[in-house]
Image (cartoon, rainbow, N blue to C red; front, side, top):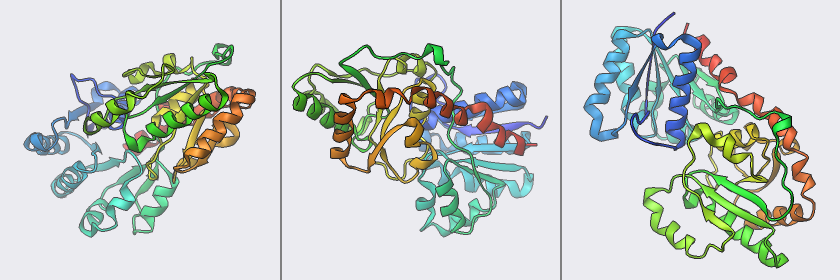
Length: 346
């Protein structure tokens, strides 16, 4: 079995619940299962620019001692790690693979001609969505493979599904806590429905790490939380199903139009929990209203309000989709998705 190095933000020794770290750890763990732990070496880029000398040395070590290198850099790391790997690889001639996290790459590369040229030399660029593949191919790329986001989760069985006994119906959000994730939209819509009906039809629990640059905004927002809206802190990524299964629906009111394939939706499907989401650019790659819940127009808070109001009168419209959510989650298991990468490593 060929040996593979993985370069990315693992955050070893720290608790990180952001999408970048969670996916990096998940890819590594699944490749260890499929290819043997003895054939996988993980190099942690924790520290960013402050650890640049260490990271550049890791690139050298990865190429020197392994047959393949899988890199998962963020938008800063892509400008350093991948060019350095390509330069060094003129000597080592290894397999270079770049796993993209999120849906930002095509837009990011539009005005970066030199970086585009470098990335075209990679053996594979693995993107989360078909629209991202199309956008990059329009820029001349021929090494794009669709590999949707995925998770290794203990999915519920139909007999384990939990159904609410009545009001208040429990809603939740699992995401980074920041304005761009639509947290305020969800708070506004839930409060508006409860006030319109003059009773607590819905409660809302918010989970996730607070963006360090937006703590003041969130503290101010919390000051106006009624008792039925709470911030509940963090949930380890491998415990999400155990928490989510108790909820009526997951809200995903993102205001990131180039959102990729959010892991939180996969969590919800594995828990048999339908989703109420804004429709962003790549939503069709992960969300199908026939099976998974209900969608509303991007940034349309009134649309979210109308859905919640309607479902308060006919909750069975949402509950009838719990079983189909479970079946839909089969498309995003790590065993199935990561095998596409593993097979290309030889």
